[in-house]
Length: 173
Length: 192
Image 1 (cartoon, rainbow over the protein chains, first blue to last red):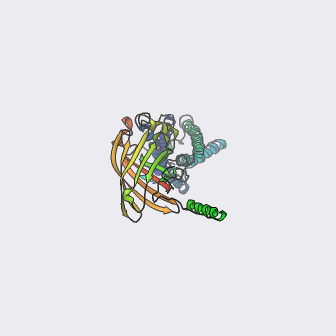
Image 2: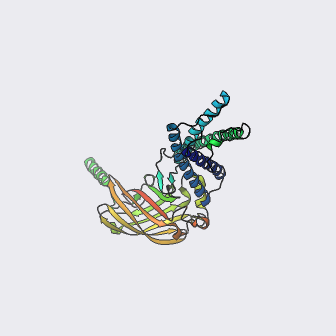
Image 3: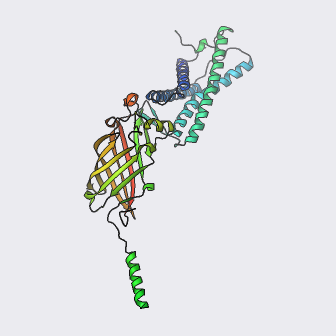
């Protein structure tokens, strides 16, 4: 049993998106003020909005479609995998959300691709902005840690257990 | 004699109570007034304000054509919303406040447009460059206060604001809108 084509496509698009946005986020926050910094911040935010939209689709798809039955494994492994998946679903929504809230609190509206203004939920509040930055960063590191475990587990299933866990999420070439 | 002194005193007092009021609104209540600006950065509407500016003016609603005003803005009092950006715009590529500490707007004529609307023409000087600009404004009286609200738009490139790497309008747009909210009173004399 494989995941559906839609689930596979969304999984890898989001994987690519968070890897890119995470790396850019790490790089950009130390930059001195310049047009390049303003550009790359905007691109990071647009990527975040895109990931959020894909994540909403993904969660909706997941709630309305049964995933394939897991390959046989010890109960604790199944529980850890299930818990990690659920947390990752929460984080692909929560990380972009906290980025958007942080930007609003810092007084900079998010305008998707420079044309579609996304309303500010929060008014400008520098202290709150700094706190939300901490939350955004912390959630990112939690996500990075979980993604690391997720990738290692998938590779372990594929290379050591030689089961179908990874294969059922790979696109058919 | 006592009566005479009393009358004299009363008379003097009543004279003193007749205010020598100017017809003009000529004293700006600077703490009630604001000078803001707005622009777009990567398509995002941004705004800020100047904390320090001064305005010498005389405006008689009955004779708007005779009005005069000179505004001076302390450019280093800018508040863009971030300390990093405040420092950046004081630098050579932007305002270059060390060489050009102030911006000036000298009103050259006010044209009534009907109702409470006016067109304000003036000479705008920024970073050593001067241009004739027009502001759209409204004027209304609120009790003892005369309240002016209006805005003008200039192109930053015309004044070499944001040179070098910043010259590209793709990040910071060329159009900069300046908005003013001025509260003035009629003073008894022109002196403060």
